[in-house]
Amino acid sequence: MLSFQTRWWLSWILVVAAAILIIYWSVQQAGQTRVIRIATAASGGYYYEYGAMLKEMIEQQGNYDVELIETKGSVDNRGRLLKEEADLAIIMIGSATLRNLELVAPLWQDYMHLIVRKNSKIKGIMDLKGHNVALGSKGSGYRAQSMMLLDHLGINESSIGMNELYFSKLLDTPELEGAIVTTGMLNPDLRAVLMSGEFKLLPIDLVEGYSLNHSQISTTKIQAGTYTSAAGPLPTESIATLGTLAVLAARTGLPDDLIDTLHTVLFSEELRRKAPVMVDLNPLEDRLLRYMPMHPASARYYNPYAGFNELSRSLSWLSQNSGLVSGLLIAIIAGWLQLKYLKRLRNLRKRSNLETGLEKIFREAVELERAQKSAKDIRLLHQQLNEALTLKSQAVSLAQGNHLNDSVLLLTTLQQCSDVMRQIEWRLAGLQVQEMAKQQAKATAHH
Image 1 (cartoon, rainbow, N blue to C red):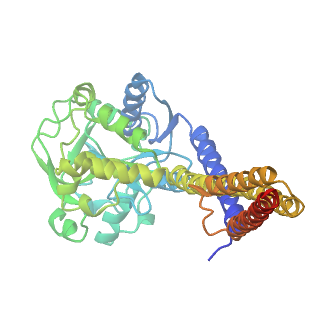
Image 2: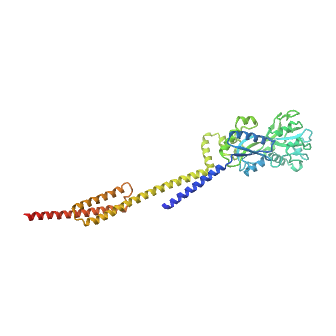
Image 3: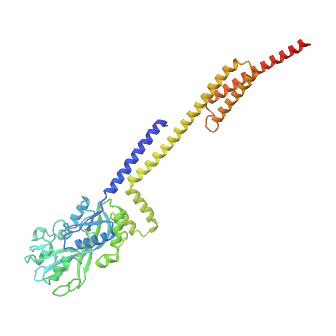
């Protein structure tokens, strides 16, 4: 059992700890930037263009400013999130994992495009050896997808010339014969290349077998007439290819209100109109995305069991503000201990004052005892008897309702008053007997 003094010091230690935690939480809150850094890809690509649309619409909400970061692509973006050099990033999930990151929302499907010059001898994916074909710069999702496919087909990248170039170099580099580009269909650079009329799209061979080996890759088609070209719509007929999802990912620890702002923008009519390729997909119901780490605010948004939203929101808030909650709890406990201490101190002071009053009564009773021993006058003894009775009444009044019934001082004081009263009563009885004897003697002498 802790002593009273120990509990008093403990309460003050808790008060200081609570103050430190609350100050720390306040500093954290104040230090949270209102600038969102979004990693996209190189300007000219769809990732950057989409990032620019996000920037405009997020800033219209009025809560955040947005900084777009040009990067090499998905692989580079993942690294920037892990290093906290960016807050959000567009990532092609077939090119980079979301391990240690958090999914915010699926965005659109990226398609693999095999682009070659019309006069090229390349007839399919197995003909790339010995030709100059852009596979994408290192760190890009394009290149990651190209390397995975070539590794599966047993084609060494060293056998392909000029493979680190960006595919838009096709427009001003005649010796570059083609490119493998995995991107969204609204990519401005892709559309510019195809618009020239100098290129054609080839089907990707062996897509069924390849997709069986990669859970994040699916077989799909680029529909006939998807792209405008100076030589007529491309492709001229639907062609087989591979697809994967582009998603918006976040570094861990972003606040819920930021993610809620993103959801407001992502599912607005305006953005859906500007970006018609966006998918309407619930990641919690998708065979692949459901197993990926997801931001709590996103999980709530997509959760079909809306009745649990408030509980989930509360738990998430408690988790994000654990410093504040801990500080408040400690402050409450410390406050409770302080109140108990003050109440105990007040009771001790009151008891001390009462005991001081009892000591005064006791001393007066002792003085009265001494005084009555020399008193010879009956009237004076009656007066002293009344004083003793008054002192006893005062002692009893002090004890009532003040938890002094077990006080040794009270019992001693009452005993002292009773003794004095008894002594005075004995003396009064004796003096009265003497007085009566004198009166009888006088009466006898007269007769």
